[in-house]
Image 1: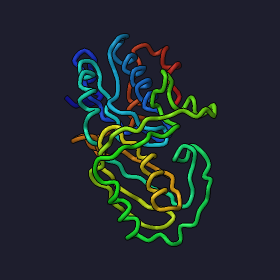
Image 2 (image 1 turned 180 degrees about the vertical axis):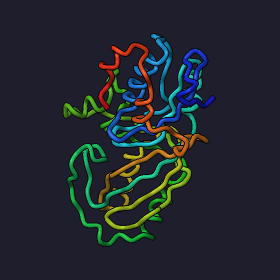
Image 3 (image 1 turned 180 degrees about the horizontal axis):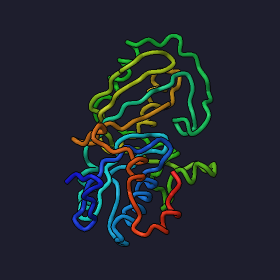
Image 4 (image 1 turned 90 degrees about the horizontal axis):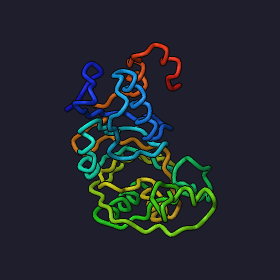
Length: 245
């Protein structure tokens, strides 16, 4: 069941396709929607969750499930994902993206498009991937990034993933635009790190956008900022306490 603002009803349950903005956490999206739906419906308690985290520095499709549709979350999480992104060659970062400053600079002058295509092909299929140290992977009850930000070294076990397609969309060194279809649990940041190692020049992720989860498409998603501005609080006095966007 897909909904618009005109028929939001937590009792009946619903699925919202949201275009998560850059620098928002997936939890930010859930928190703001929960707050606004409470204002709209006067309903204090209802279930709400998302079907697959996006990093703060990634944007794109987030499936939000409300009410009885939260039972669908495990099913949606198992769907394959599609992403578009941009790789920067010739440097690395601690987080494998732009959360940290580039370092370990290296020449990429000998890299050509055919070489990159060949390296991309090596990643197609089933493989073991080690998640980033700056990630939400749980280690002894804590997220890996909590250890990383304290400078503590911990072992992160590799996980099996599948990459079904990996294609170059634009080749303009040091940037490479790509498109990928992969299984759940795939960290694109880790893939980019591994690509950089294979190329011998290092690489990090400049940008990432999730474009599909199974048959759910980003083109059908709602932009959350105008979506929230259309919600009207039940109690006008509470409007003053709305989240600042």
